[in-house]
Every structure is written in structure tokens, then in C-alpha cells.
Length: 454
Image (cartoon, rainbow, N blue to C red; front, side, top):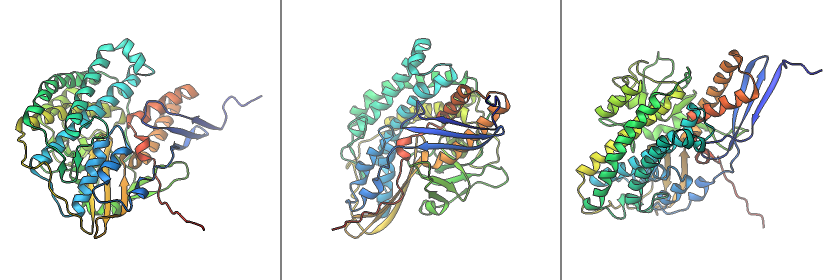
């Protein structure tokens, strides 16, 4: 007769639903204690860092955008900033404003996709967006309108909505006229109302108690909510250490990667500790720099006021991963408002780009992808050929924090008596979707050596 209360259990979820990409989960439980949680990313390695070597310095922005079909702008912008840094070029003025506008478009469409299509069903008892469309059709339609508004921004500036082709080093191949941007204004005004309604909608969800045990890492930029540039800034988890920043050129001195046996994604540590990047980190580090309208929305959503400056104690810092949907909704509203501001102030530049002549050097670039801080580093030789590449995606950085979240949440579920396989599976899938991982972005390969044998 089998033991009705086995001392050791294993829970295997072969495929997690409603995340971008393919991943599995393996939990080990012994005597009622969760001793291991492994998020197993089994997508094949992508090899981008390997095949970028030897390419001309003008190529990475277009090539790296193919890493992800959901956030290609993030990869283009990080690549552009890194290579421009290597070549000693700074893009400013209207070209820089257009870059921020393009990135706002991606924030709108990507965050909206996650809120309405992937995350909201967990809060409303639906298995997927198909079920959600039956019970909450109006909310789904609103989400589609918002996503289409974001796609329209990306398409107009980038030439197409996915994998934009108008981006280049130094700016854009072609800058739009003010008249071409004008139709976006009416669409974005409607989107602003939809974004407000989304904030109010998600504010009504029920949020379980939880806290992410990790340091928070995000870019910080003086005077504005960081999107397309900034300085890496850390808000430690324990509340006893002050926030600190470090130069972007030192990023890999602080964020170190290692290969783990159970995943094709590298795992990262920040100064030896687990860390989390993304919406919760951005709110903690730069929330005080959101617009008055976005801050009003945050208060209405129940987030309260963020710290008055990065790292001003733990007050105002949201560490509950379930409540990340609130921050995402506020960020969508902010991105719509910011897009409207940029369009209103836009004047077409005399030239759409600044020349970026090749030179030997190493450059660093980082931007805030919807899922968190995305870092690129490129080394160039004197001919402008790429000799070395390092790309650190948000999901790869977040893996350690996600696994610890899973371990803690499942332990709490067991302590509450929710130990059935069905209940634990549902809990784990929901916990992973809190972080909106992009599995394909994180699928990685540490080193590629090719030996030709003749």
C-alpha cells in the first residue's frame, strides 16, 4: 500500500502556458519543504553573440532586433547606444526624441499584451484570453485597441510594426513630417482614456500577499522616467543598505553570468545576490519621476507614492510580484502621455541621423525593455568590425529571482494545505507569469568554439 503522505515529491510541469517561448518547471519537495525550484528553459541556444562577430558595426541594430518579435525596439536601441558609445557619438535633439517615441510605442503594445492577454486571466479565473473574451469582452477589446495604438506608433516610425527597418545608427533612415505624426495624436488621445480604464480595471483585482526577495535593478536618468537610457541603479532588498549606482561600462563587473545545467539561459547575480529588473524595479528607482498624471493613476491603483528619490528607504517600494500588473498599467498610461508630448513638441530635423564613423573601441548601451534592463556591449576593431559581443537580457537576469519566488510561494501554498498537483501547478504558472518572462530572449549560449578538422 502506498504512503498517502510521501516524504519526497516531485512536481514536473513540462510546458508553461501564456509566456513568450518554451519553458518547463521542476519542483522537489521533501518532508513538506520545497528544497528546489528549477525553471528549465529548453529552447535551443540562439548564437547571436557568436554570429555577430565579424559583422560591420552598422549591422547589429537590425540583426539583434530579430532576437525578439515582441520587443525588437529594445534590442535595436540598446545596440545603437552601445555602438555609438564605442564610436564616440551622442544622438540628441529631435532624433533622440523620435527614439523615445518609438520606444513608447513598444511599451504600449508589449505591456498591454501582457496585461490583457497573458496576465489578467489569472486574476479572473479564466484559463486564457479566449475564456476572458467570453466573460470580459469589453476589456479584451480595449486591450486590443491599446495594442493597436502602440503598433501604429512603431509602424509609422519604424517602417513596420515588427522588426522595424527605419532605425539606423545615429537615428533613422527617414524622419516623419509633423503632418505624418498628426493622425497618431487622435488615436493616442483615445488610448489615454483606455489606459486610464485599464488602471482602474486592474486596481480591482485581488492580490495575494507575497514579496520578492531580491535586489531591484533599473536605469535611472536625471529628470525623467528612464526608458531609452540611464545609469544602472540598485535598490538593495534588506533596506539597511543605501541605493547605489555604477557606470554602465562596469555593468559586467557587477552583473555576472553563469551557465546552469538545467537551462539554456544564463543565470545572473548582481554583486553576488539575486536581483530583479522590470516594472517593479523601475517603480522603486524612478517612480518619483513619472508625470503627475501617471502618479495620480498610481495612487488610484493603490500603489501609493513612490520613494521621493531612488532608494529612499523601503516606503513606497512595491515588492509584491502579483501587483506588478498595476505598475505595468501605470507605465502604459505614462507611455501614451509621453508619446503625445513628444508629438506635440516635434519639429522635423534637418537630417534624420548623425553619422557614426567606425573606429576601434568598446561601447556599452542599456535601455529599459518592457521586461527590464537590457544591456549590450560591442568591441570594434579599426575597420569597424565587431570582435566581441555581450548581450544580457532581462529574463536571464530575473531567473534566479523567479525561481526563489516559486520556491517561497509553493512553500506558502503547502503550509496552507494547498498541496494537490493541480493547485500547485496553477500556483506556479501564475507566479511565473507575474514576471512576464521572455523565454526566447533569454535562451543563450555562453561560448561557441568551432574546430575545423581536415
